[in-house]
Amino acid sequence: MSAPPLSPNHATLVGATPPDTIGAGDRVWVRRAGSWRPGIVLQSNASAATVRYRPSETIGTGVDTVTRNSLRPRHDHDPYLDKATVADPDRPAPALATRTSARTGI
Image: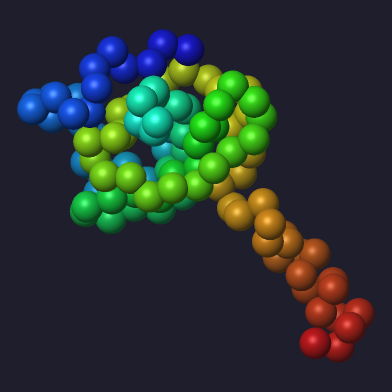
């Protein structure tokens, strides 16, 4: 994958992605710990976006809120992130939650 060449600390915001123009599920590059990491937007507003990203070359992910200086559009495919759903993996799927509730009477 080819990450953006510029540091987000440059004075210009050319190429910066305003968080309010991206939506849940959009592919982005996230600047974290001095490098660009592949990520997926979970939610966004006018000033920031919450993204799930790979903080290292492993299959693990992290979630963080970042400003527009730390976001760039990503067109490359990431085999770990792009197969995952945008939903929180720690939350059961709605169908599973319904079946669980019916069994326990909650």
